[in-house]
Length: 365
Ligand SMILES: Cc1cc2nc3c(=O)[nH]c(=O)nc-3n(C[C@H](O)[C@H](O)[C@H](O)COP(=O)(O)O)c2cc1C
Image (tube, rainbow, N blue to C red; front, top):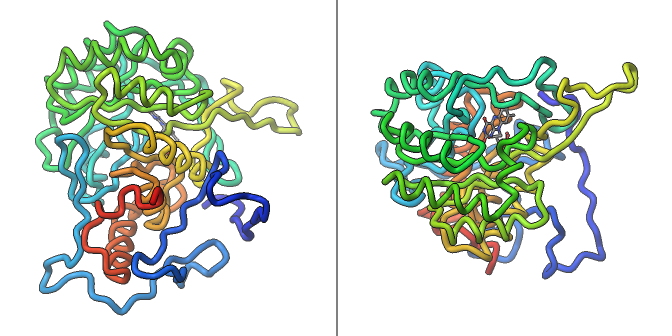
Protein backbone atom coordinates (compact mmCIF):
# COMPACT_ATOMS: atom_id res chain seq x y z
CA UNK A 1 0.00 0.00 0.00
CA UNK A 2 1.11 3.53 -0.63
CA UNK A 3 2.01 5.51 2.47
CA UNK A 4 -0.59 8.23 1.97
CA UNK A 5 -4.14 8.26 0.65
CA UNK A 6 -5.92 11.15 -1.06
CA UNK A 7 -8.50 12.30 1.48
CA UNK A 8 -9.88 15.40 -0.19
CA UNK A 9 -10.89 16.73 -3.57
CA UNK A 10 -10.05 20.31 -4.57
CA UNK A 11 -12.57 21.86 -6.97
CA UNK A 12 -11.74 24.85 -9.09
CA UNK A 13 -14.81 27.06 -9.38
CA UNK A 14 -13.18 29.02 -12.23
CA UNK A 15 -12.74 26.09 -14.61
CA UNK A 16 -15.10 25.83 -17.57
CA UNK A 17 -16.55 22.40 -18.43
CA UNK A 18 -15.73 23.08 -22.09
CA UNK A 19 -12.06 23.68 -21.47
CA UNK A 20 -10.64 20.57 -19.81
CA UNK A 21 -7.47 21.23 -17.85
CA UNK A 22 -4.28 19.39 -18.90
CA UNK A 23 -5.04 16.66 -16.37
CA UNK A 24 -8.70 15.73 -16.14
CA UNK A 25 -11.08 13.33 -14.44
CA UNK A 26 -14.08 11.78 -16.19
CA UNK A 27 -16.83 10.84 -13.76
CA UNK A 28 -18.75 7.82 -15.10
CA UNK A 29 -22.38 9.08 -15.29
CA UNK A 30 -25.66 7.20 -15.09
CA UNK A 31 -26.48 6.65 -18.78
CA UNK A 32 -30.22 7.11 -18.37
CA UNK A 33 -30.17 10.01 -15.95
CA UNK A 34 -28.35 13.29 -15.49
CA UNK A 35 -28.38 12.72 -11.73
CA UNK A 36 -24.96 11.48 -10.53
CA UNK A 37 -25.38 8.29 -8.53
CA UNK A 38 -22.39 7.17 -6.50
CA UNK A 39 -21.59 3.53 -7.17
CA UNK A 40 -17.93 2.91 -6.55
CA UNK A 41 -16.18 3.79 -3.35
CA UNK A 42 -13.94 6.80 -3.60
CA UNK A 43 -11.05 7.83 -1.43
CA UNK A 44 -13.37 9.62 0.98
CA UNK A 45 -15.39 6.48 1.69
CA UNK A 46 -14.25 3.37 3.53
CA UNK A 47 -13.14 0.51 1.28
CA UNK A 48 -15.83 -1.84 2.63
CA UNK A 49 -18.38 0.22 0.65
CA UNK A 50 -16.73 -0.61 -2.64
CA UNK A 51 -19.55 -2.71 -3.85
CA UNK A 52 -23.24 -2.23 -3.23
CA UNK A 53 -25.47 -3.97 -5.75
CA UNK A 54 -28.41 -6.32 -5.66
CA UNK A 55 -28.20 -7.09 -9.38
CA UNK A 56 -27.08 -10.57 -10.45
CA UNK A 57 -24.26 -10.47 -13.00
CA UNK A 58 -24.93 -13.86 -14.56
CA UNK A 59 -27.92 -16.10 -15.27
CA UNK A 60 -27.15 -19.81 -14.91
CA UNK A 61 -23.48 -18.99 -15.51
CA UNK A 62 -24.15 -16.87 -18.63
CA UNK A 63 -22.93 -13.29 -18.10
CA UNK A 64 -25.68 -10.71 -18.45
CA UNK A 65 -23.22 -8.08 -19.64
CA UNK A 66 -20.50 -8.26 -22.25
CA UNK A 67 -16.95 -7.17 -21.41
CA UNK A 68 -15.49 -8.25 -24.78
CA UNK A 69 -13.51 -5.68 -26.66
CA UNK A 70 -11.47 -5.52 -29.84
CA UNK A 71 -8.15 -3.88 -30.74
CA UNK A 72 -7.47 -4.10 -34.48
CA UNK A 73 -7.95 -7.84 -35.19
CA UNK A 74 -7.45 -8.94 -31.56
CA UNK A 75 -10.51 -10.10 -29.63
CA UNK A 76 -10.19 -9.69 -25.86
CA UNK A 77 -12.55 -11.39 -23.41
CA UNK A 78 -12.25 -8.36 -21.16
CA UNK A 79 -10.55 -4.94 -21.45
CA UNK A 80 -7.81 -5.43 -18.83
CA UNK A 81 -4.28 -6.06 -20.12
CA UNK A 82 -1.00 -6.52 -18.28
CA UNK A 83 1.22 -3.46 -18.93
CA UNK A 84 4.77 -3.97 -20.17
CA UNK A 85 7.48 -4.45 -17.55
CA UNK A 86 5.48 -5.82 -14.64
CA UNK A 87 5.58 -9.55 -13.82
CA UNK A 88 6.24 -10.48 -17.43
CA UNK A 89 9.86 -11.67 -17.31
CA UNK A 90 9.17 -15.33 -18.05
CA UNK A 91 6.55 -17.80 -19.22
CA UNK A 92 5.68 -18.85 -15.65
CA UNK A 93 4.80 -15.36 -14.44
CA UNK A 94 2.91 -14.58 -17.67
CA UNK A 95 0.85 -17.76 -17.26
CA UNK A 96 0.07 -16.70 -13.70
CA UNK A 97 -1.32 -13.36 -14.89
CA UNK A 98 -3.39 -15.13 -17.55
CA UNK A 99 -4.82 -17.38 -14.82
CA UNK A 100 -5.60 -14.26 -12.79
CA UNK A 101 -7.97 -13.07 -15.53
CA UNK A 102 -6.11 -10.57 -17.74
CA UNK A 103 -7.68 -10.08 -21.18
CA UNK A 104 -4.24 -9.76 -22.81
CA UNK A 105 -0.57 -9.61 -21.85
CA UNK A 106 2.16 -7.23 -22.95
CA UNK A 107 5.68 -8.58 -22.52
CA UNK A 108 8.56 -6.73 -20.98
CA UNK A 109 10.27 -4.51 -23.59
CA UNK A 110 12.87 -6.67 -25.31
CA UNK A 111 15.94 -5.57 -27.26
CA UNK A 112 18.36 -7.33 -29.61
CA UNK A 113 20.94 -8.27 -27.00
CA UNK A 114 20.84 -8.89 -23.23
CA UNK A 115 20.90 -5.71 -21.14
CA UNK A 116 21.55 -5.49 -17.42
CA UNK A 117 19.73 -2.23 -16.78
CA UNK A 118 20.82 0.39 -14.26
CA UNK A 119 22.48 -0.23 -10.91
CA UNK A 120 20.33 -0.10 -7.75
CA UNK A 121 18.36 1.70 -6.47
CA UNK A 122 16.16 1.37 -9.55
CA UNK A 123 12.73 1.69 -7.96
CA UNK A 124 11.31 3.69 -5.06
CA UNK A 125 7.81 3.91 -3.61
CA UNK A 126 6.47 7.47 -3.43
CA UNK A 127 3.28 8.95 -1.95
CA UNK A 128 0.93 7.97 -4.78
CA UNK A 129 2.90 5.61 -6.98
CA UNK A 130 6.27 4.22 -7.97
CA UNK A 131 9.32 5.97 -9.39
CA UNK A 132 11.52 3.66 -11.47
CA UNK A 133 14.58 3.78 -13.65
CA UNK A 134 15.12 0.11 -14.39
CA UNK A 135 17.06 0.90 -17.57
CA UNK A 136 15.23 -1.73 -19.69
CA UNK A 137 16.87 -4.85 -18.21
CA UNK A 138 16.06 -7.89 -20.39
CA UNK A 139 17.61 -11.15 -21.57
CA UNK A 140 17.63 -10.21 -25.28
CA UNK A 141 15.22 -11.41 -27.98
CA UNK A 142 16.75 -14.86 -28.65
CA UNK A 143 16.65 -15.94 -25.03
CA UNK A 144 13.26 -14.36 -24.36
CA UNK A 145 11.88 -16.05 -27.50
CA UNK A 146 12.34 -19.45 -25.84
CA UNK A 147 10.16 -18.27 -22.94
CA UNK A 148 7.59 -16.79 -25.28
CA UNK A 149 7.17 -19.93 -27.37
CA UNK A 150 5.96 -21.76 -24.25
CA UNK A 151 3.09 -19.35 -23.87
CA UNK A 152 2.03 -17.85 -27.20
CA UNK A 153 -0.44 -20.68 -27.98
CA UNK A 154 -2.54 -19.36 -25.10
CA UNK A 155 -6.07 -18.15 -25.95
CA UNK A 156 -5.19 -14.90 -24.17
CA UNK A 157 -3.36 -12.72 -26.72
CA UNK A 158 0.32 -12.06 -25.96
CA UNK A 159 1.69 -8.79 -27.31
CA UNK A 160 5.46 -8.48 -27.76
CA UNK A 161 6.94 -5.16 -26.61
CA UNK A 162 10.21 -4.20 -28.32
CA UNK A 163 12.72 -1.36 -28.12
CA UNK A 164 15.64 -0.43 -30.35
CA UNK A 165 17.77 2.52 -31.33
CA UNK A 166 16.84 2.64 -35.03
CA UNK A 167 14.35 1.31 -37.57
CA UNK A 168 16.42 -1.69 -38.60
CA UNK A 169 16.69 -2.95 -34.98
CA UNK A 170 12.93 -2.60 -34.56
CA UNK A 171 12.35 -4.50 -37.81
CA UNK A 172 14.59 -7.42 -36.74
CA UNK A 173 12.89 -7.55 -33.33
CA UNK A 174 9.40 -7.31 -34.81
CA UNK A 175 10.03 -10.20 -37.22
CA UNK A 176 11.42 -12.39 -34.41
CA UNK A 177 8.47 -11.59 -32.14
CA UNK A 178 6.09 -12.63 -34.93
CA UNK A 179 8.02 -15.90 -35.43
CA UNK A 180 7.69 -16.60 -31.70
CA UNK A 181 3.90 -16.37 -32.08
CA UNK A 182 2.87 -13.07 -30.47
CA UNK A 183 -0.48 -11.70 -31.71
CA UNK A 184 0.65 -8.06 -31.98
CA UNK A 185 3.72 -5.90 -31.47
CA UNK A 186 3.99 -2.91 -29.15
CA UNK A 187 6.73 -0.44 -30.08
CA UNK A 188 8.23 1.11 -26.96
CA UNK A 189 8.88 4.63 -28.22
CA UNK A 190 8.37 6.16 -24.82
CA UNK A 191 10.63 4.86 -22.04
CA UNK A 192 11.71 8.09 -20.28
CA UNK A 193 15.02 6.95 -18.83
CA UNK A 194 16.96 4.73 -21.28
CA UNK A 195 19.63 6.68 -23.13
CA UNK A 196 19.37 6.28 -26.92
CA UNK A 197 16.06 4.41 -26.70
CA UNK A 198 12.38 4.95 -25.98
CA UNK A 199 11.43 8.59 -25.64
CA UNK A 200 14.73 9.81 -27.13
CA UNK A 201 13.66 8.39 -30.49
CA UNK A 202 9.90 8.41 -29.92
CA UNK A 203 9.78 12.19 -29.61
CA UNK A 204 11.10 12.63 -33.18
CA UNK A 205 8.04 12.19 -35.45
CA UNK A 206 10.12 11.43 -38.57
CA UNK A 207 12.17 8.71 -36.90
CA UNK A 208 9.04 7.35 -35.27
CA UNK A 209 7.31 7.11 -38.66
CA UNK A 210 10.33 5.42 -40.23
CA UNK A 211 10.25 2.78 -37.46
CA UNK A 212 6.50 2.19 -37.73
CA UNK A 213 6.59 1.89 -41.53
CA UNK A 214 9.60 -0.45 -41.35
CA UNK A 215 7.93 -2.79 -38.87
CA UNK A 216 4.53 -2.63 -40.59
CA UNK A 217 6.14 -3.65 -43.90
CA UNK A 218 7.92 -6.60 -42.26
CA UNK A 219 5.19 -8.27 -40.19
CA UNK A 220 1.59 -9.27 -40.78
CA UNK A 221 0.35 -8.82 -37.20
CA UNK A 222 -0.97 -5.50 -35.78
CA UNK A 223 1.56 -2.92 -34.60
CA UNK A 224 0.76 -0.76 -31.55
CA UNK A 225 2.74 2.36 -30.68
CA UNK A 226 3.29 3.27 -27.03
CA UNK A 227 3.63 7.01 -26.50
CA UNK A 228 5.04 9.20 -23.77
CA UNK A 229 3.33 12.09 -21.99
CA UNK A 230 6.76 13.76 -21.68
CA UNK A 231 6.42 15.62 -24.98
CA UNK A 232 4.98 18.95 -26.12
CA UNK A 233 2.06 17.31 -27.93
CA UNK A 234 1.24 13.63 -27.55
CA UNK A 235 -1.63 14.21 -29.98
CA UNK A 236 0.73 15.26 -32.79
CA UNK A 237 2.75 12.08 -32.24
CA UNK A 238 -0.40 9.94 -32.20
CA UNK A 239 -1.49 11.48 -35.51
CA UNK A 240 1.98 10.88 -36.99
CA UNK A 241 1.82 7.25 -35.80
CA UNK A 242 -1.62 6.78 -37.37
CA UNK A 243 -0.39 8.27 -40.65
CA UNK A 244 2.57 5.86 -40.68
CA UNK A 245 0.18 2.90 -40.41
CA UNK A 246 0.04 2.11 -36.66
CA UNK A 247 -2.89 -0.14 -35.75
CA UNK A 248 -3.38 1.27 -32.23
CA UNK A 249 -1.97 3.85 -29.84
CA UNK A 250 -0.98 2.95 -26.28
CA UNK A 251 -1.00 5.94 -23.91
CA UNK A 252 0.81 6.54 -21.60
CA UNK A 253 4.25 5.40 -20.49
CA UNK A 254 5.58 6.73 -17.16
CA UNK A 255 5.92 10.44 -16.38
CA UNK A 256 9.49 11.71 -16.06
CA UNK A 257 10.11 12.51 -12.39
CA UNK A 258 12.66 12.66 -9.59
CA UNK A 259 12.97 12.10 -5.83
CA UNK A 260 15.68 13.70 -3.68
CA UNK A 261 16.31 12.44 -0.15
CA UNK A 262 17.03 15.55 1.98
CA UNK A 263 18.96 13.48 4.55
CA UNK A 264 21.55 12.32 2.04
CA UNK A 265 21.14 15.42 -0.17
CA UNK A 266 21.07 13.27 -3.26
CA UNK A 267 18.61 11.84 -5.78
CA UNK A 268 17.32 8.49 -4.55
CA UNK A 269 17.56 6.64 -7.87
CA UNK A 270 21.03 5.69 -9.11
CA UNK A 271 19.97 7.10 -12.50
CA UNK A 272 18.85 10.31 -10.72
CA UNK A 273 15.63 10.66 -12.76
CA UNK A 274 13.05 8.03 -13.54
CA UNK A 275 9.45 7.41 -14.61
CA UNK A 276 6.51 7.90 -12.23
CA UNK A 277 3.62 5.41 -12.41
CA UNK A 278 0.55 4.54 -10.35
CA UNK A 279 -2.46 6.47 -9.05
CA UNK A 280 -0.86 9.91 -9.34
CA UNK A 281 -0.58 9.73 -13.13
CA UNK A 282 -4.14 8.62 -13.89
CA UNK A 283 -5.53 12.12 -14.61
CA UNK A 284 -2.58 12.73 -16.95
CA UNK A 285 -3.27 9.48 -18.80
CA UNK A 286 -7.01 10.15 -19.04
CA UNK A 287 -6.34 13.62 -20.48
CA UNK A 288 -3.90 12.17 -23.04
CA UNK A 289 -6.38 9.49 -24.14
CA UNK A 290 -9.19 12.06 -24.37
CA UNK A 291 -7.10 14.39 -26.54
CA UNK A 292 -5.78 11.59 -28.75
CA UNK A 293 -9.30 10.19 -29.23
CA UNK A 294 -10.42 13.53 -30.64
CA UNK A 295 -7.72 13.36 -33.32
CA UNK A 296 -7.21 9.76 -34.45
CA UNK A 297 -9.49 6.99 -35.75
CA UNK A 298 -7.38 3.98 -34.69
CA UNK A 299 -8.05 2.23 -31.36
CA UNK A 300 -6.46 3.57 -28.17
CA UNK A 301 -5.30 1.51 -25.21
CA UNK A 302 -5.32 3.54 -21.98
CA UNK A 303 -2.64 3.04 -19.33
CA UNK A 304 -1.51 4.93 -16.26
CA UNK A 305 -2.67 4.67 -12.66
CA UNK A 306 -5.55 2.24 -13.15
CA UNK A 307 -6.43 0.39 -9.95
CA UNK A 308 -10.23 0.08 -10.05
CA UNK A 309 -13.21 -0.47 -12.35
CA UNK A 310 -14.03 3.23 -11.96
CA UNK A 311 -10.55 4.13 -13.30
CA UNK A 312 -11.13 1.75 -16.21
CA UNK A 313 -14.45 3.41 -17.01
CA UNK A 314 -12.78 6.83 -17.02
CA UNK A 315 -10.30 5.68 -19.66
CA UNK A 316 -12.99 3.95 -21.72
CA UNK A 317 -15.28 6.97 -21.59
CA UNK A 318 -12.30 9.14 -22.61
CA UNK A 319 -11.93 6.96 -25.73
CA UNK A 320 -9.90 3.84 -24.89
CA UNK A 321 -11.11 0.42 -26.04
CA UNK A 322 -8.94 -1.43 -23.51
CA UNK A 323 -6.64 -0.61 -20.58
CA UNK A 324 -3.28 -1.78 -19.30
CA UNK A 325 -2.49 -2.23 -15.63
CA UNK A 326 0.97 -2.22 -14.05
CA UNK A 327 1.68 -0.55 -10.71
CA UNK A 328 -1.69 -1.66 -9.27
CA UNK A 329 -0.13 -5.08 -8.73
CA UNK A 330 2.07 -3.56 -6.06
CA UNK A 331 -0.65 -1.45 -4.43
CA UNK A 332 -3.77 -3.62 -4.87
CA UNK A 333 -2.48 -7.20 -5.11
CA UNK A 334 -2.69 -9.87 -7.76
CA UNK A 335 -6.49 -10.09 -7.83
CA UNK A 336 -6.73 -6.69 -9.48
CA UNK A 337 -7.82 -7.98 -12.93
CA UNK A 338 -10.61 -10.11 -11.54
CA UNK A 339 -11.78 -7.42 -9.12
CA UNK A 340 -11.91 -4.84 -11.90
CA UNK A 341 -13.87 -7.17 -14.21
CA UNK A 342 -16.36 -8.18 -11.51
CA UNK A 343 -16.89 -4.55 -10.51
CA UNK A 344 -17.27 -3.50 -14.16
CA UNK A 345 -19.95 -6.15 -14.70
CA UNK A 346 -21.84 -5.01 -11.63
CA UNK A 347 -21.61 -1.35 -12.63
CA UNK A 348 -22.87 -2.14 -16.11
CA UNK A 349 -25.75 -4.24 -14.80
CA UNK A 350 -26.67 -1.52 -12.32
CA UNK A 351 -26.64 1.10 -15.09
CA UNK A 352 -28.35 -1.09 -17.72
CA UNK A 353 -25.32 -1.15 -20.03
CA UNK A 354 -25.11 -4.52 -21.82
CA UNK A 355 -21.95 -4.02 -23.86
CA UNK A 356 -18.81 -2.36 -22.57
CA UNK A 357 -17.82 -1.09 -26.01
CA UNK A 358 -20.97 1.10 -26.02
CA UNK A 359 -19.18 3.25 -23.45
CA UNK A 360 -16.06 3.96 -25.53
CA UNK A 361 -15.66 7.72 -25.89
CA UNK A 362 -19.02 8.67 -24.35
CA UNK A 363 -17.35 11.51 -22.42
CA UNK A 364 -16.93 13.33 -25.75
CA UNK A 365 -20.67 13.74 -26.31
C1 LIG B 1 8.87 -1.35 -12.80
C2 LIG B 1 8.32 -0.90 -14.12
C3 LIG B 1 8.89 -1.37 -15.31
C4 LIG B 1 8.38 -0.94 -16.54
N1 LIG B 1 8.93 -1.44 -17.69
C5 LIG B 1 8.41 -1.07 -18.90
C6 LIG B 1 8.90 -1.63 -20.10
O1 LIG B 1 9.80 -2.49 -20.12
N2 LIG B 1 8.36 -1.19 -21.28
C7 LIG B 1 7.34 -0.26 -21.33
O2 LIG B 1 6.87 0.08 -22.42
N3 LIG B 1 6.82 0.25 -20.18
C8 LIG B 1 7.33 -0.12 -18.99
N4 LIG B 1 6.80 0.39 -17.84
C9 LIG B 1 5.68 1.35 -17.92
C10 LIG B 1 4.32 0.62 -17.75
O3 LIG B 1 4.10 -0.32 -18.77
C11 LIG B 1 3.16 1.65 -17.75
O4 LIG B 1 3.12 2.33 -18.98
C12 LIG B 1 3.29 2.66 -16.63
O5 LIG B 1 3.81 2.07 -15.45
C13 LIG B 1 1.96 3.33 -16.29
O6 LIG B 1 1.00 2.38 -15.88
P1 LIG B 1 0.71 2.02 -14.33
O7 LIG B 1 0.46 3.33 -13.62
O8 LIG B 1 -0.51 1.12 -14.37
O9 LIG B 1 1.90 1.32 -13.83
C14 LIG B 1 7.29 -0.02 -16.59
C15 LIG B 1 6.73 0.44 -15.39
C16 LIG B 1 7.23 0.02 -14.17
C17 LIG B 1 6.60 0.54 -12.90
